[in-house]
Image (cartoon, rainbow, N blue to C red):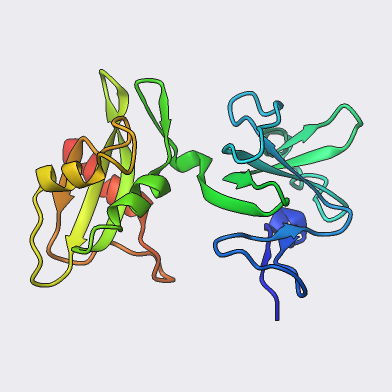
Length: 215
């Protein structure tokens, strides 16, 4: 039994944790044979990112689809052609590659928050918040803001019997993430945060709830 990573568009596996060799915690492993994994600048979708730097995970290989059936526009958004004529699949996942070629997914492009021109990855903020011993559940997302474009907001459920103020949490985060990543708004909830059908915390649902309040 081995763990693999892929998409329906990559039929479906592109990376795998090796059967023999090192398995790094949090990594999706190494590329499959004849598979090229590139970490590209998510803005221009062409420039390779240095090792250890965040970018969009892109796949080339025999398992990558030719395109979406009778949907040229969607295909154009998801696929690009290299100088060599190969078709490259843009996964929408933000990842890093270490010096040994192991890949770590850190977020999704569609979840990325742009505040004052600065890219904030919600998962990075959530991981910092979870370091506080009083936190049971946390969702971080961006909300529209006329001055900043978006602002960072955190929805939090504390562990039973624990207390924490928004200001105390911000102080806790100061040495863990940058000032731009620290949530401008923090909302504490007594009930569990919304989840998807498979039990994952639902960023989409909680953002829709927030937008419905202001509409």
